[in-house]
Length: 313
Image (cartoon, rainbow, N blue to C red; front, side):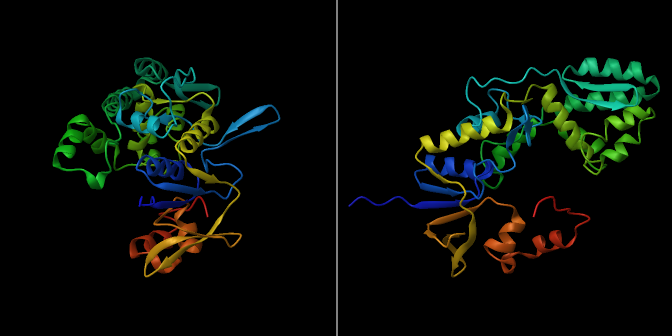
């Protein structure tokens, strides 16, 4: 008698839920995804309004360079395909301060030349910034396997591939963008480093983001967020996965501290061998499983709104 496949039920059809569902199908499981909205995608979504397209998510997509580990992940889940085209964009972004416009170009040398022309008095900080962006271009997200499955050889390989990142972290890893901005004298350069990401962000994250654009590993897929989600949905369904939209999960069913299924908002019970929650963690702890399962670390994070601000509830 043929043994039936084990089943995975996923709460939430955003990028995480779709990715988990696709990998579940590739591993041989039956997979159902339950999404509360009319379409999948979660925060990775776009809308058409009065002749304009509003993209809620993709400023750039890290992992677009062919041959990188993250690009292979994106291709596996269908977010990118072999011949996916990217927007023709030659810059990271442009900051406007009064009558001045300052641009961080994809061409890093052009950025350095223009910043030095604008503010010769900031030469030391400008050159240091450019030098460390070059270091950060070698930073690639380790995506061959989960971090908790990595062995000593994997860590050695990762360290070798990101040999210059310690220099970036030493210089910019312990300051935020407001502190970085204060190192510059010219008001347009001060604005340049605080008007794209929140000023409280760690400065090294800004450098790594810009470096992904410079290295060609951070592009914007044509069609933006919506097109990317649609590719993933198509991939999931081609593999035989079931996606149920307009179907909120009201709670995760638990017996003996083990998840055994879900209950939907219309009181439908769906049993499963494994349950994956890919919703906001506060939604999970508040409604799906209850705060009694929140460990001390999570409790301390959610109790300190100033240090750990909540952007979604």
